[in-house]
Length: 295
Image 1: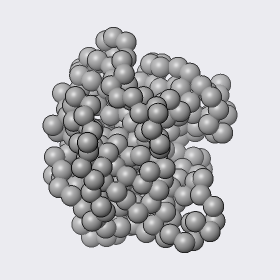
Image 2: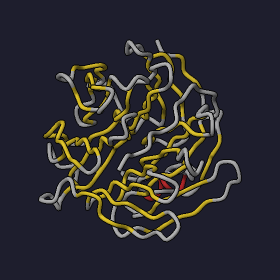
Image 3: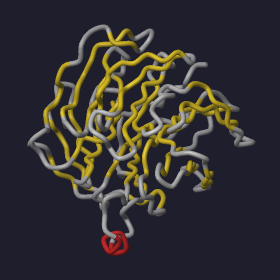
Image 4: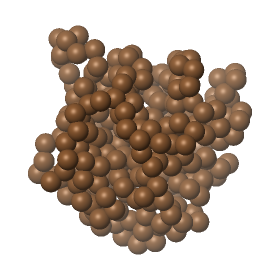
């Protein structure tokens, strides 16, 4: 049985986001980036100084990743865009779903090879409307189709295994990869089955020891699983709609968690100012710095 840990962390940012998602630590700027998907905003925070910026976007975005000191990659409802860090100028890199205007991007992460895995879903969470794609230097490969809510995309420390989930199904999958490309070399299999449990398997990260840290949508928690799938720890958070974790700090030894207000009544949101906030879990972890997308 997993060890339960009451929340002993702190609030990194108290802004109540309708759908806070896609956090990552930029190893170049040393800033945390995350998205308010429904609010069409990019939030960035320097954890050392506390300086924060919020950038309005012309579309819903769910993923932000570093390219170099001048540019970032944004995963959006209209495709992948390159953003100039200083001017904010946006240019289309590739549209991975040009014929699906009813979809938007959701969970995604950069593999150690420099390729991006990114999932899509219907804007109304339509059954089977989405997919998971591999994008390398602008070349798009469809990996898995008929996905309703793609989440938990993360990679083992050696880059040889990927994890992902359709939150509607709630079975965390694993698949062997070519570490040099981030492309699957076989069929996925079930790593963890929580289809009969409360709450949804949402965003996840894999640490330097192969442990998986997973946000539980609707449960206000982060669950930790060892590389065999054993549930070792359950960390409580003061927001019920926890969405995605990310390692941060220069040594990647801390864990942040985004959350959302989506699906909550107005009185629930007002009663708990922690709903939609972004948290530091308050523990030391053996994390890994986020990948850099290679153009």
